[in-house]
Length: 394
Ligand code: LMR
Image (cartoon, rainbow, N blue to C red; front, side, top):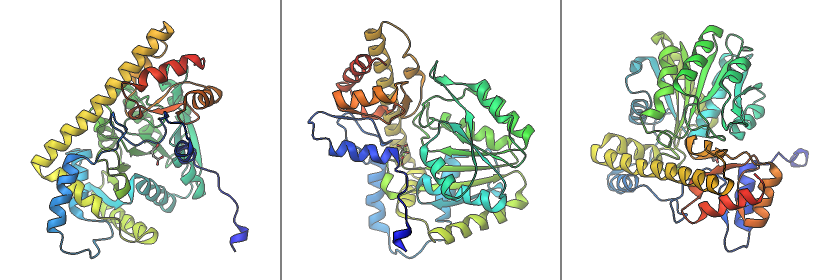
């Protein structure tokens, strides 16, 4: 049986992680995988998460299974963080998943079950794993125009033009904030225009929300998602706690299904539980407990939000510093978009050859499409990257 297997295409982000590890040069800069790092290059456990873990270690009395959809208190806390009071709880189904990727996978499978002919429209570019999972499931992915390489911003008109091809029941995958890989995001008026078109076409929005709190703020980063849920008869949200709680390896995420017809909530909820059972049975619990505790305990929550703000504003400062250094070295404003971008990533606009030159000559690692993880930088490496970019002819 095994001899019939063929090699699968490699994930370019994971390949880059391995290449970086193997590089023997003493000074090397990892701007690859989307993992937050502080100025020392360390991925810290957030203070409130550590405190919650200590409390929970004392209190936990059993490791018996939770429900198929996970602990209901986790769902309530996450729904409150993401949607606040946008919709009554009776209109919302939710199930814990292994990370945000697990939520994306379950969402695609739900779409496939409910609507086998639905096509999933994805931004060009999008997170490579979106495309890979859709392909694995045999689903149709249709790219819509998104990034304007000339300005480093969103090609909003191009996006609307592409979405004219939507058919009723198609799904549009949207990055709720902090677009991965480009860092370029829609403004409020553009979100409204996209939403009006989805409504007109009777297409279903699916939001990937992996970086809430990394862009303009915890509340601000949920604004587009709330608007979508408020105005759409049905919507799906795949949310991750990996980044904003820094619990990457705990695999903590949630799939939320919203409907304006509360009669549909029960079947949506049962389907989410069923899908969990088919794929992995019960979702991981430890990270979800920590998140619930942090969100529900006022002191822990305040500390967590303060630390998240430090992370967010630190990345903003690095963006400003990099844009300013590039302005100084190039004598032009053509890199100003880096300071406008939000979240962990920016697509710099370098060619694959220039990316390779920076890796070979300066041991700077970024994804081949020139996506950088801003949090991989610090005050010392910002000028190194800027110089390498100019030297490589970016
Ligand atoms: C990324 O885009 O780098 C992160 O979402 C990590 C991953 O799994 O790819």
